[in-house]
Length: 113
Length: 113
Image: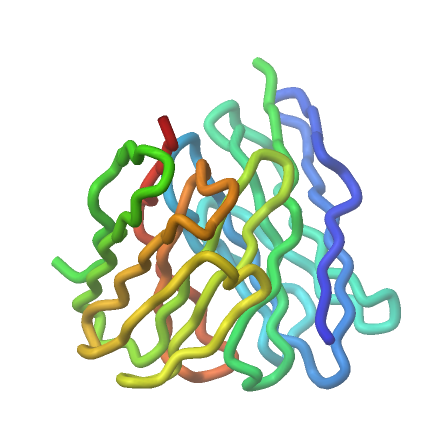
């Protein structure tokens, strides 16, 4: 079985400061890992993914994520937060070609001016 | 303009009625998914389909039904057997590759009145 944990319901940062949104996962095989963002009353938008290769993955809007196999983590990061980054962020995992993804419960990011 | 379209955006249902939520995609994706989103609970998988004329139950399929007669369409019926249907419903599609990200519709908010 596959699972995802986002240990923080809420993350607050000041504009211009670095941000980190945490994600840990559990799979039996090689993981495919994803980050998505959701704005109020909208669908999810894809940010970035890890399939294989370089542990540091770069995605949309200046976001990046670091895959750490030993810690089974895939934390989302951005060097300098913007107020417009405020949204709900979801981490997801897929165990190989199992055909379905499992999502975390989401983390609400609030960036204050 | 490629994408995935859900309709209607808002839907009101009387108790005891069945309702059908529409999901159409023109991305030529084989796989389609239905998720339910409740506050603080993230996304929970209702049904998914990897190919036309085939679909599998997700984690919370009770009280729901689907069909996949065409590649482009994956309608979800919320039946009267679903005890707590008020929620935000999200449809998604992807290719069948394990590392493929999902594309989401804008969601349908269903309210039982």
